[in-house]
Length: 270
Image 1 (cartoon, rainbow, N blue to C red):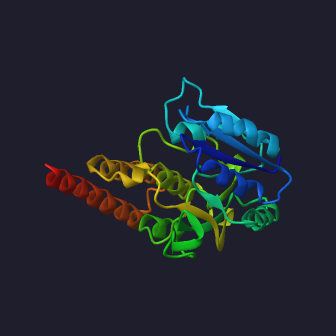
Image 2 (cartoon, rainbow, N blue to C red):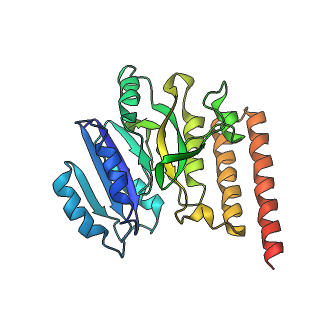
C-alpha cells in the first residue's frame, strides 16, 4: 500500500461521504482510507456498509473503548492501523482537492531523505464553488519554525503528506483538548532537518466552514489550551534545541497572550 488516508469521525453522516469521495477521486491505485468512528450515534455505520461496496480498501473501525474519546485517539489509532508508506490526515467534513496527492507522492518518491511534503489549503462554506480565504498568510519561508510560531505560515491537518516512518511515537497529544494539531506540526518542525522538508506552495485541502467544532466554541478553556499547547512546545524546544532563544521568546509571548485572552473572556462573561 502506497498511501493511507486517516479520517476520524463522529456523527458526520451527512458530510463524510463527500470527504471519502474526494479521497477516491484522486485515482491512486495503491490507496487505503481508514475511518475511525468515535462511536457515532447516527447512521454512520449503515452508510459505511454501502460505501464499502463502492470503494476498495475502505476500512471502518470503531475507536477501542479502552482509548479516550475524541479525535486525538482516533487519529493515533488510525496511524497504528495504517499500512501505507505515506500517511495523510483528513477531517470528516473536509475535502481533498482533485488530483492533489499525485504531486506530493511524486516529490516524496523522488527523494528518500524527505519526511514530509508540505502543502496548503483554503476554507469553503459548503459549496466548493465558493472558496474563501487561504489557510495561511504565506506559502514559503526561510525559517519555517519561526514563521510557524508567529502563525505567519501554517498548514491544515490534511495539507502535509507524511512519510509514515517519521512518526516514532503517537503524534497527537492528549494533554490539550484543542491546539493538538498545532502542537503536532510544531514538534515535527522542531525534529525535522531542512533536507527532510519539501515545501509545495499549492492548495491541496479544503476546510469546511459553518460546521460545529471545538475551535468555534470560544471560551476561557479554549485559550488556556492554546497557551498549554505553546507551553508544551516550549518545553520540547528547550529539550531538543535549547539555543533557539529567539524562537523561545516568540512562544513565551504567545503563551502570555493566550492566558491574557482567557482571563479577559472569563471576566466579560461573569
